[in-house]
Image 1 (cartoon, rainbow, N blue to C red):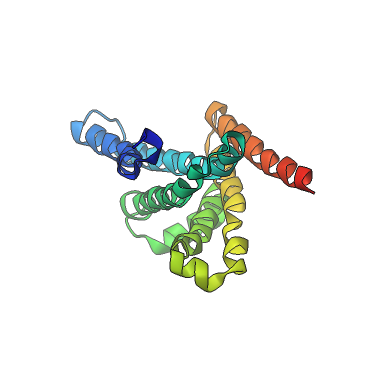
Image 2: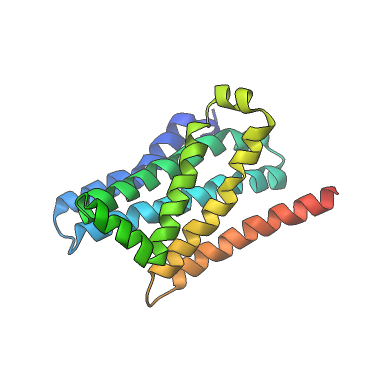
Length: 191
């Protein structure tokens, strides 16, 4: 079985960022472990969103339809990492201070965008089963087009968070722009 067809390998590789973060935190050398975990899980959420969105262009470029079988798993890993990101925020950063978090969401626009992206990812994760695809039929595809908005919100969340060096947010924005333009030009070519 080839490397690309080995689900277990993809599954384990997708856990490596979490294992690395746990290892680094347990080493005790980090100046601010909560900030590190928050940034790391946010970054990996974006990485998995971009990977999810790249499956269709990869299929179109290579002609190999096998890329599509990994899209769901990668999307669910994006949800997994955003759940860790959100949990870190509400538990380790805010200590379940609900009024403080509501005020934070209202006061800081980047948190508002991140929270909106998180909330929009929930129905996508909940409807990612074969049974839900059958039940929702055409509406499933319409619902899952929210991933484009979610990716835009996620990249903007990161862009607005960063104060000085915008290099990484710009990289994600360029990747997302390429992926979105690819879809637009592909649809225009198909007529």
